[in-house]
Length: 206
Image (cartoon, rainbow, N blue to C red):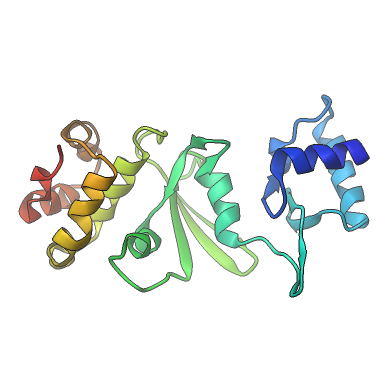
């Protein structure tokens, strides 16, 4: 058990989600891995976040650490071990780039890691709306797809209001190109295309 615990610490670190599906140790079956995890949980060396999800907690003056819902969902549906397969979308992404100060109660993610067009997940009193990506997300196209999806529902008023302050700097900072517009924008709605053209953002890609 000591060796297995060291493997978990070295592989996943502390205060990080550990998914059973990501554990590969000495060719053990998933059932044997579950048994080992249950024993470690019994001796308070690891904590169970939800079924199939564990973590190694740390101690502070405020007590034992806990996982953030966003961190768990990000590792499961957005990126893991430098592999990108999803992105935050909707109001959450609007907040991240500064288009709104409102923080959503419901997290929204677009990902390759779902077979359903739309799926609702509830954990620890939080809710995630998970959308299947319209094309495969990877490290090279994630910034472009996330940005173009932003224009699916956003009104022209908001685009024009934040055009120079936020949107144009974001295009340049993330190195979005005309080639990306040609390749990826047609996968999105006519509304997204119209917002790009009517606001003039279409001419900002280099």
